[in-house]
Each structure stands twice: as structure tokens, then as C-alpha cells.
Length: 142
Image 1 (cartoon, helix red, strand yellow):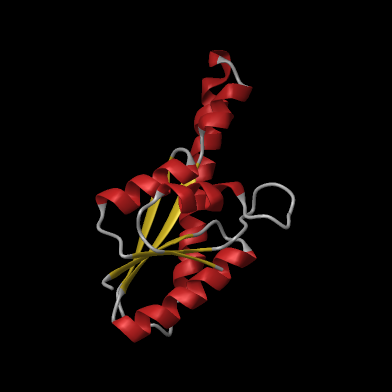
Image 2: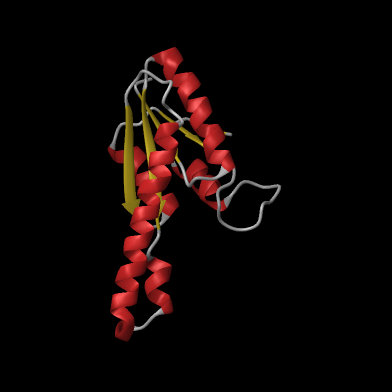
């Protein structure tokens, strides 16, 4: 197992997923890839083109927040001596995670059962569920 992908949104569950990924990466000598997706689609739907400056500002803020989430996630890996990479992309979270897994020879996905979005439920979060049913690689849901 060479590459472990950990989608993270800064939630408590994704923090637990990072901890488990570190544990597994130490066992197998794996690289950890911390992955954050920020979705700007909904931003542009709230404003019309007369507010393009505001849209651009909000998108820039979301990109900065994504990098901040990844920076904090990487800080959780401080005691891990292996390689840690961070990746920030924009788009639909489930779609982007699945595409990344497909195109980057990921051996395992470790992700939280729930993210920041929506109300906490007893069921899997929608992004986690979508990824779990779509990818053909092993997934560990924390």
C-alpha cells in the first residue's frame, strides 16, 4: 500500500480519519495525501454577473480556507516521518475525490463518516456514501 488518500474538510471525523491514516501509513510505509475540495458552484448561483467582484472575492476566500484546512491537517501529521502531500481542488466533493482516486493510483481512501455539511445524522454523510459506492478501491470509513 503506497498511497493513502484522506479527504478532509476540517471536521472532527476527518481529523479522526487523518489519525487512522497515519497509523496505517506507519505500518505500510505509505505516502499520505490530504485532499480538500471546495465547491464554488453554489457561490455563483447566489449572485448575478453584476456582482462578479463579490463572486471573485468569495471564491478567493474559499480557496484560502481550503489551504488553511490542509495546513491544519498537515500539522496533525507532524509526528509522521513519511511523505505527506496536500491537494486542494474545486468542484463537487464526491466527484473530485472519485476522479482523484481513479487518476492517481490510490491504494486506500480513509475518510470520516460525516463532514462539516448538514446536520449530524445516524447515517453516512452524503459525500462519504457517494464515494463509497463509486470507487473500486478499498475505503476505510471512520
